[in-house]
Length: 219
View (spheres, rainbow, N blue to C red):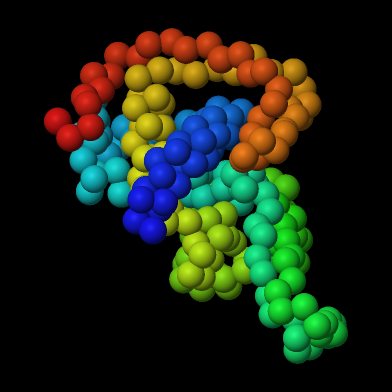
């Protein structure tokens, strides 16, 4: 079991991590106001150099809001499959799903659609990191926001993924000024589902080296 969990963490996790970092960069860079605020938060915390310690990176609350908002809009896994015992009736709000003779029935939860449900989120299609910066995450219902699934089958690499994403974004955004060459402000960007939900449209990015002296993690 431990071996299988480690394989999932480092192999499958690598796919989701790279996909999510690209999506985060896309969301941040295409919103100039968000980009400026992310850089300002880093400048305030780190000054002219970067102390990439665990405690320092944890204090990047606005950047964390950008990461969570990206996970809401573009969850790496847009659907989650689960099994349920259907020998009894299942009650979902005002709906009743009648039981069957089958001991286990598979069903799918659409993370993508739930995260964009206007009954749960105000302006659901807008990229707004503030909704997570100002929100008490403990007050979110389990099925309202679940990019890493939930319960006993939740992703074991959730904390690793969040911290790794933060560290890599800090390095990239502090070392380079990024500019994306997009048509129509990125509205024509397309997605595909291959292991994870990822951008399929080619993105062309211009990187300009900054003056900041970025140290390696742990220095």
